[in-house]
Figure 1: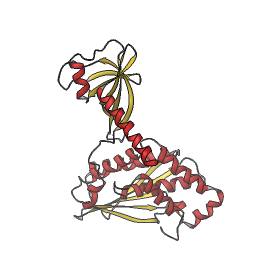
Figure 2: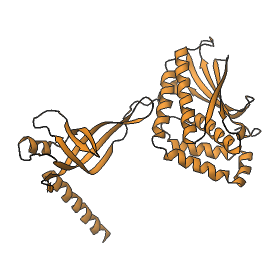
Figure 3: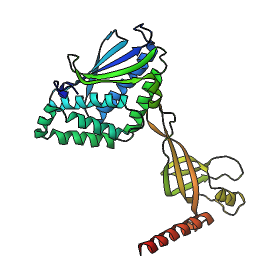
Figure 4: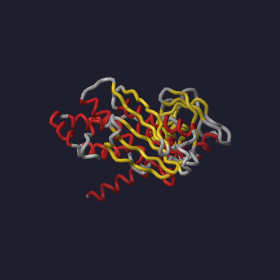
Length: 321
C-alpha cells in the first residue's frame, strides 16, 4: 500500500492485459467476456455489502491493453468511501489469489491491509472498525457467495486463457487521479490454470433419518429411478441400497398408497456457470425403516447400522470411564 495516499481514495481498478507480440491488441470476445466476469464480481461484493454502486469505464490505453473501472456510490459519506475501498481491495485480492485460498482468508488479509492505513486508524475512533468487521461477517454469511465468487474468477481466467497473445494480467487499485493505492499485482499466463475450477461438483449434503413417501417404487432390475415426496416435493431418487431393492423386487416388502421409508439420503449438488448452486441428484444410500400401516418396521441393514452405532457409543463410554 502506498504510504502517502489514503486507502479511502481507492475507487478505481486498472486491469492490464500484457501481450507478447507488441500489437497492443487482444481478442475482443476474450476481453468482453473477461470484463463481464470482473463486473459480476464487483456487483456481487457490492450487493452483499448492501451498497448501491455504478461502475464507469475509461478509454483503452497502450502498453499492452489497459482498462479502468471506477466504482461510484449513490451516496457520498465516509461509510460509502470505506465500502468502496473494501470492494476495490477485495476484488483485487480475489482476482490474484488462487483457488486454494478461502474467501474468508482473502477478506481477512484485505481488512488487515486496510487498517495499516493511517486515516483508517483514525476512523477507528468512530467505531467504523466494528462496522467493517460486521461487513466481513455479513459477507461470509451470505449463502453461496464463495461459490459464486470462485466460479466468476474461474470464468475470468478460463476466458483469459483463450487469448493467444496474452502473456499475463495485472491489476492495480488507484484513486480518481490514477495514483496507485495498492501496488500492481501480476498473474502470469502459466499460472492461469491454478485459478480455474476443474469440477463444478460440490460436497454432497448427507441427511440422516430422511422421511420419503414412496409414489412409485421400481419393481424390476435396472437403473430406473424411484419417485417419492420429500419435503413436500415430488422428486426422483436413485435407490443405492441393493439390500432394500432386493427385498422389494422379491416381494418381501410391499408398498401401498402413502407408504414411506426412513433413510440415509445424499443430496448431490453442483454450481452452474453463474456460480448458483443447484441440486443434480438424490441418492438413497441406506433404508433404516419402512412404514407398514403407519408402523415402522426396521430393515436388516437399518438394524445393523443401529447396532453398530450403539456399540460405538458403548465403547466411547468405556473409554470415558
